[in-house]
Length: 125
Image (cartoon, rainbow, N blue to C red; front, side, top):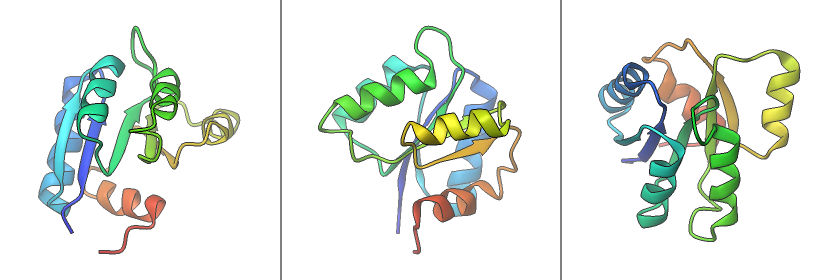
C-alpha cells in the first residue's frame, strides 16, 4: 500500500535523508516541510497518512505544531511521530504523554525507518 508521509524538520539534510529512506525502501510518497507553519498548511489541505515531526524547530516547535494539528478536525486523526535528539527517559515519557503515536531518536538508520514507523503505527501492508 502506498502511504503518504509528511516529514517536518528545519534541517534540509535530515529531510532529504528521511525522504530518500522512505521513498526507496518503502516506496511511500513523501512531502516535506521546513517548519511547523508549513506543516499545518500542508496537513489541512491534504492530510497525509502520518507525520514525522522534529521536536526542536525555531518559531513553532514540534509539540506546538502537534497541538495545533490536534485542534483541527481535519488533522486530528493523523498520527504524529516525533523525531528528536533528546531521548532521555523523562523527555520520552513527556512526549508520549502528549498523545503522539511514538518517538524516534536521532540519529536514525534511514533504511530501518520505514519498519520503525510501520511498527509504531501498526501498519501491515
